[in-house]
Length: 195
Image (cartoon, rainbow, N blue to C red; front, side, top):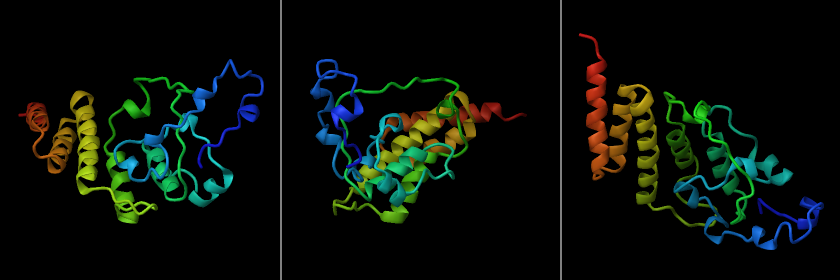
């Protein structure tokens, strides 16, 4: 398991009433062999993950090739070696900073790169022999392309947004808002071209 907690070892200074055992209830929908589940969302949060040393030695460290999405790619790798145990309780906080790398437009859609790398390396079948339907992969790709495109539409390069919205449409051709944003970003790009 990725997360193994012994209440007495982790929080010796807290008495049981201060940290009730229901905080350690497992979220069964986001636990187990999560390879397939990672194609719908990145369900592990780096700030609160606990891993065994031997697992890290097997899986390796974060791939520094990625400026963003290092954790997402890492969780896919981890999911090939072990089941994951995700707690229901919120036990950490994450401050959203508008100036962070995550909130700045990048020329590379790292989430899409991660998904394509994972698919080329392991395919759609997880270590538990469950297969992710193509429709789920396409929906996830459409989502990560839309998010990437929208960030560029709002505060980045309108040409990058236009190209990314077209990738969204490739994966989800019947989403009307994708077509609308494609046209809006193309218009924004054409208005930005001199002359």
